[in-house]
Image (cartoon, rainbow, N blue to C red; front, side, top):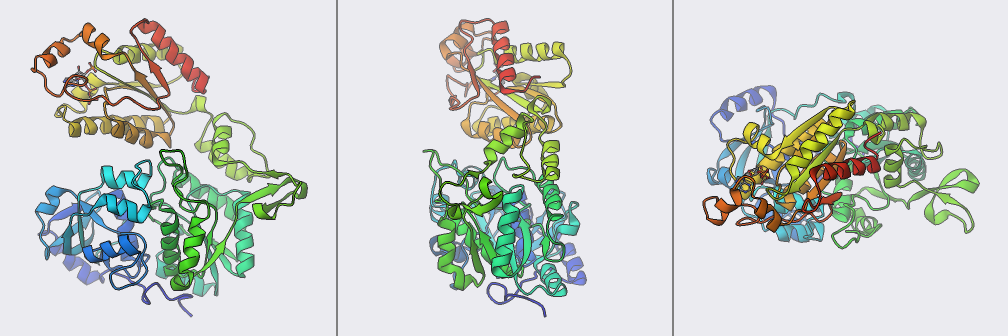
Length: 570
Ligand code: PPS
């Protein structure tokens, strides 16, 4: 007995060539234009090639794309809610014609597949965001990616797989759809309920999955996403270590863990339908959808992007067509009076229900506070504590931003010196001028170059922060978008404290220490921030300092007090 469920569209795709044909394709690829796949595209291509995205045989062409965006279906009518597209730069697209074959490589240049380009098209990304995500608010991480970071042209066409993307981690827990199907068959699992997650799991999840498996009379597959999830999520290495600990509390013969290299879109209801289709391709018969499935959080008005149970409602509409059974769940809460977990709608009036939200958990980890046994297993908490030591032992980035002459470099220097005096921490200064000299010497001051400069600073600061150090950055960083990107790069790895040195332009210009403002006014220096190029004020910095009326020493003291107050200095 093989498949438990027919794959979506009837046939499980496997787009890998045999060894001989793959070797030949590798030879041929030397003559082909080559595209380096982004991290997101690597995730997508892995699931196209191994059949996780059956019936797709490549990245979507224009007709499929438009049909998916507008009506959740491929051009032939088959249900498919999320566009899977290959976005490229204008420059690359200009050099490619429909009918060409291109080589798709990973970041190390390893050939993953070739693609016969059947379509080259310029998408209307706002329409895509509105159609697929129901919003164009770029606080939604996928809207942000789509509108601000993805390439302007999409290439579509069928793929010939040469080799799967390489993974060195958790290889024993990674399976293709066929491998998982074969395992289910080997274990005689006839019904399998899948649980999707991008978070660490605690007792509430264990109880929920137990109940789901009991209700469906099915075996249980914990199927967490280890591709791309919401920016700021706990890294998957930590999560998988937590899952492994948790799994030891599950009956051995009835449950399994497999890692899914999916790039999530945080598309809420549409994403839930997609997740169901993918799980069916992996051989599952049932799929759990709880509260706020694949939800991206709050929009710029402070409201949830999607209703808490919208995903269940949409899934219900397509459940028959997807042909995987929905196992809906309300939020699980701990009922103190019964010393038991229960769905929130089953709590009796007068009973005391307890929960610890994700935010509260992070707070307790941050300050080394108690996390009760009813909430999680001690060994799971140990893994999280190892990853999230109390703030005073964590790395962090101090990100000063402000106009030239605002005082940011001088304060940054003073703060660094004071920290060196205190001792015990490793501090690196990434001052604007210093970076321009050592990291970005070829860059100018166009928007594109400034963004690149800030991204480089962000990258270095994120590495320092990840490894427990302190990075003090002091670039102008005039644009909101790139500051946000840096925050996202760092926040999941340690602290990020943005300090707007808000000394007004008149004061900076009057100081004109380097004589640059005079030159900018005279038009000798072009694109000068504050004069002929914009500075977008930070909306929610952790701190603002105006150096008009205070000394540098006083400003540095304020920064240290803030750090102490936030818990970063012990
Ligand atoms: S950015 O926008 O963040 O990439 O700028 P940054 O790398 O911090 O700038 C470093 C210094 O470059 C000098 N400089 C200019 N600044 C702004 N606009 C233009 N066109 C420009 N040309 C040169 C300026 O002295 C910056 O240093 P600070 O320390 O801010 O005065």
